[in-house]
Length: 513
Image (cartoon, rainbow, N blue to C red; front, side, top):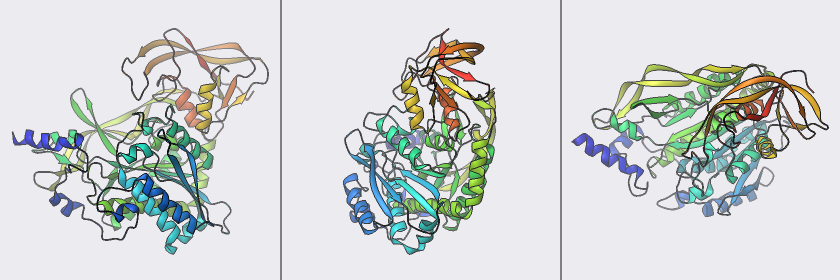
């Protein structure tokens, strides 16, 4: 009975706002997540409660930029659905370095994760005002979106104004903020990318564990891709270079970290999914554009201002670590990015995570102690191919599908056009199995297809689009154009099809046209 009561009480965190109910006991905070003693002068700390709102952030940023006009500039990438300008801070100090490493930092893509934006505001202030970081500005060019989902952030809601999740929209691009954000990222040409978030430490699945439930024990979890269309050398640089250095730095500040995992119900059993392969979210989407990419999840959803300075400093230290690693390993970073761009591996259309029984650590809510529990773990970082295809020389898209091409261009994928009609031998896709979901996911009716490839010669009219795979962002072309890929235009229902149809997307396997 006590167990049921505890679960009911803790579950209120999904029904009550963070300002009304905090599921974390004071004893847990004091023992495992004591507040940092540090001065932070972002707008949130000019008041006793709440977080920095958009109308407070804008004058804060404007004052910083006005004081450092030779270093920083504020422009706007577009407007939110409610008409608010989305700020972009570009920091580029003049120095003797002409080929600076480009670092992209974004926050607030989910509106109920306040330490993400607060931490990035603190980072901007420190970069511009603290001489300790002047060397970073000599070596790096930095692009920052401090609050991506302004409408959601202002009401502390995860979703954009239309109810969609901006971090599930990275391939279908159906939300205007997603398009602005992705275009700004593409135009910047990042070599290193960070996306700051917060996670829920009292997940419903955790409350079914132990006598009275468990809580996540980590200050931060780090999400980086296991997608097999990201070359192994780049995945290894991320994991054994940037991630390792970050975990080491966090440990010196007594901050705990782990690779990111979440939970799912599979046939009535709780399964832990570690890592990412999905191009619909930033960690993998940015990696597929050939850069070091990490999504950072700080412990914080529904905790209000509990350990708020600790959460902000965690965000700050991680950004510092990534910038430092980029500076100190510039030559190796550039070598691997070039090698990845030139890689010609097979196309991995679908993959499967390695499953195992693995031990994870938790905080037992009843005893307020750390415990270890064996769980069912599916690790994206140990994925293996299920469906592979030869890398095509190019994908070909019929000229009437300009909407798809516009999305590809936003993703940084280059497309050329046939100047005149031409007979070309291609592999076409024929849909041999088809299922369309009746229930919408993120505003779309998803499609599950199986295709057969047929080699044939077809006449393609002038204006037909040619997308060569010998380009930096070919991974995003693969993920969006291969029909069975989980985040493709077909799978997401962006391009509707049906059983027996030939798709208007083709694979060209010979030398360049």
